Length: 338
Image (tube, rainbow, N blue to C red):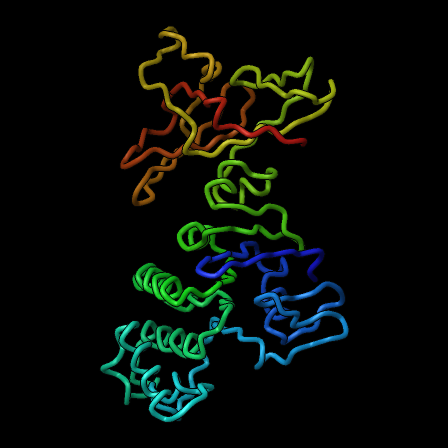
């Protein structure tokens, strides 16, 4: 189910539809491709109407390329045959386009090979070359990298992005992985329950989330519940501004684990932090784990027994029951209605 989705995709730009499974991302792609018919609204390509509730251009005439999780290569065709499938023109013109694209994806040496002779990453690049061969104005990509192992994924994503930019193709990429969206997209459209809840540059969507769920989708989130009095919300880290919120309203103060600061010099009587850091709160280490590029530490707060998470670069594994003092910069917190 998709409701009131509006997108504008520009040549040479990657727009990412990001959201959990079942939120309507793939349905949106299928309607643009012409595989499904929408109940209302219009779809335009290069200023030409391709679909409304009455008029409908067939999928094969929409100048739209498709890439899915399943590469869907034809096993009985060679690599050259797969890339040339759907191309129009003379034999020499088709061959020239095939050679051009296989050179770009560094697979020219496999031009006479067959899909079963290629690795998963190589098959993905053949599928990309095939999708780009007719020079589509729009490329729709439905989680095309999910079938690749982590070792290959980043490199192939970067190669794919470079090629799409060179072809000046407008790209709509569907994914449920925030890291992939941040890595590839020029613009992110965050979907939930069939609607786009926030849209913008990746930096803006990450640093100015629309709501608590938007924060949590990109990373773990700590949440403090507080009641507003006089436009202020009292918490274990001091007071937070809540302008325009009526007295008695409950709010959630949300912040990410990487923004929790550990005061290593404090023993309960050290110098006070700056006002922007708020009031230090005493905490006890519950558990610490090394995650590869950072350490995750879980604290139980003395103030109310709540559990907060903090991440620290590199290796930091304090013993259980170690007492520490924590602060949270005001600039890194978000205040939302509870």
